[in-house]
Amino acid sequence: MDSERIIKQIKDEIMAASAAVEGPDDDMYAYGQRLAYTNALAIILDACTGELCQ
Image 1 (tube, rainbow, N blue to C red):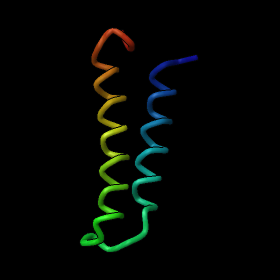
Image 2: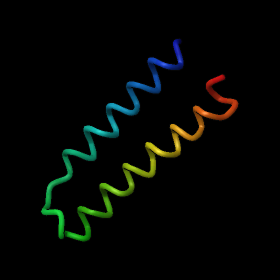
Image 3: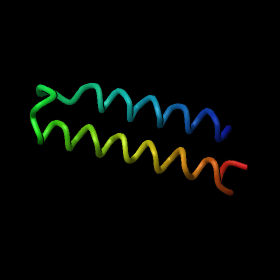
């Protein structure tokens, strides 16, 4: 499989899940969920700059 395509799909799914979190911006639980999705995306992108995607 094409690693770029897989990574793009994962990124898109994480961003969609983050956007789907319900709750106002001042809701700390919703904020934590969004932050978790953002951190997951950062980990994936960090891995892609390393040996995994080269």
